[in-house]
Image (cartoon, rainbow, N blue to C red; front, side, top):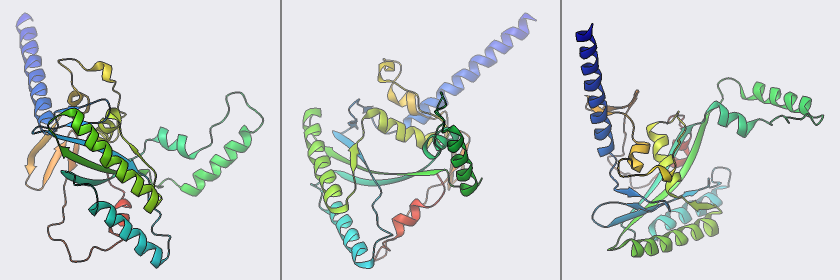
Length: 265
């Protein structure tokens, strides 16, 4: 019996060691060095980045002339920024949990009935019938991430703040799109949502210590590239990446809109 216990303990230790190793390998795929509380992300070689989230641009419902104007303003926005080291737009289609969906769509009943709960239930029942069981539970989020190369954090913050102010002003003025700068928790939540789209992100910067970093908070258990040349696995999900190998001379102006309507994470 004692021999069996020893074997079991040895096997458990080996399994724990393997799991830690897998976790370390997953973390190594996350290429930043530090994610600061204010949302400044630090990479090696003096690269610093910031992310803003912007609202949907009312494009498809406009007439042709307005659509051309919006598209030209949008391309001007991308091409006119004050020389960032790197500039990236990200569109994320995120599955919405049952709880989130209910809170956003349905009218909540009052705990102490004010005489209108019956009407609220009736309205919610009507919504359920309208939406149907197969209604979309995908939420689209849009981000600009930009980086600068500086020799200190203070200079980087100044440069990033100038860039974000310029971008946000242009988004509001030219495209009627409100935006906000993401702080560290919000940026980590975005990354976590890509790795674990069906789980809630629970993290506080007070948890940070020498043995627990922001990477520990967001990293999946496994990122495995052994399955195929065109496929990889994040925890229990199989993933693929598609990219545009060759750009056409003209980009169809509804491309981004159509991509946001794909019901995939």
